[in-house]
Image (cartoon, rainbow over all chains, first blue to last red; front, side, top):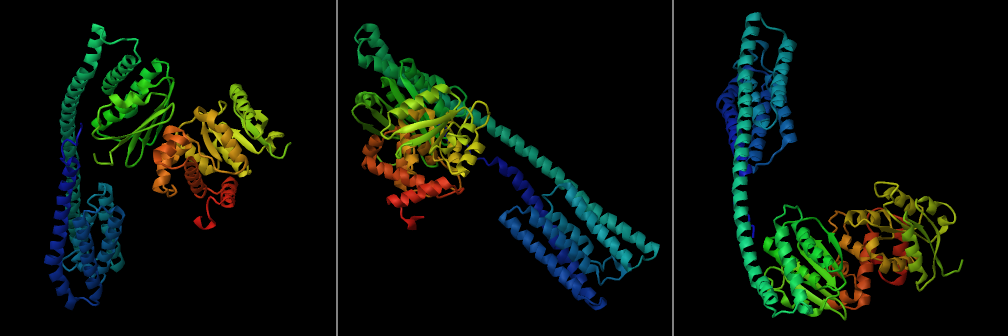
Length: 376
Length: 218
């Protein structure tokens, strides 16, 4: 039976790497805010009037940091919310620099300039590089607009501002680039890990399949071999109804075994068709109806379901109706046929499924349900 | 036209099917007469087919590739009782037909046993659920699926599997009549969801009249 083979969460490799990187960037932003910006904010209190916009902006940014931290802890992915928070950061940056005189913009007094970029990076870490570029560009454009609105300062100050802008945003953009590289490496690592996992899974499946074949051939040995021996030695009469039925059942079992190695999406119906094929060769008209989507069931349970159906099909005289119903909780295989009630006597006691037999004068109805609900 | 006679228009593009249907109807306990037939839906819109009580409609006419759900919807919207009679086995088509307001959904493999009964039921606006349709109800995973009781679910799946009321009754230890009642209740629950249609309303009205459901149940 094919059990889940390993539980190595390959898809987590990439997630773990990226999660760590995101925490690192957020830590950088928070350290900058409280280690560098907070003293500057307090120093600005006596120099700038009004001072409150700076305080409001500082609180807004702290709030953004808290929201991002909560999202990180909960590992919730919030694309649209991150973008909204990034816009909040940009606005906070504008608000914080309103009281700053034009020639001190982008200098130490304008504490928010670098900080906004860091928060932008932390929030938009998952976004494409283009989005981060747009964010930093918007930040620069807003600052430039502010400079123009307040009156362009002497050229030496403007030059210093340009140098500050390029070095701060350039560095941040470089970090974003590195993050993108990191993401690609993570994707490659995930890919490699998955491939390795696939190889391992295939090996394990092959191993299981092999064991299963061995077991089923052994089972054939117990039931088919005595039949063939009996026929060969003349102890069994081919004209006898019972012998013929046994032959049909064994043929159906062998067919099921051969059908199993075919690689098909719906193995249950595929194996059932093998039994139907045999019945049809014996002149039985079989109607198969299937309801519900294909779902995974243990190989062992599938054998038992198909085996129960095949036995009835092999014993049908003229007509049979086979059905498969796959629901959320159960898988049912049922056959109604004009078969003798004693046909199911040869059926081995199932382990994983439940078999119900109903009969009237001319019909035998066997319903096999997986998983079994009644305990034995 | 006799008062208690049911008139039928058959839309099917295979002449053998028409002959077969007329043969089955001839043996019906209540007279059923095929008044018109044709290989396109036109037969149901033009006299004398336009006034028939019931339309037996092949969903998959060879002149069209896809199932003619549009034709079905137009017939239902005109207040016709339509029995969808088709080669199609899949449950999604069955559920869609019912949602559109088809009276019932019958596959051609089960035709012989059920078409006459379905036609008689349609003539009286009484529910009729053939096994293939019960299977579709049973496997339905759509979000607007009506809520069914455990017993109703059991009856649906067993009826689909064995196609015999007697065997279902024996299997579940209830009477054959009770099996029918459960099937009818499920059918009415389906009439009560999805797209409104005159055929569904007629079915509900008749069921209330028959005491199968109470007005409060709706």
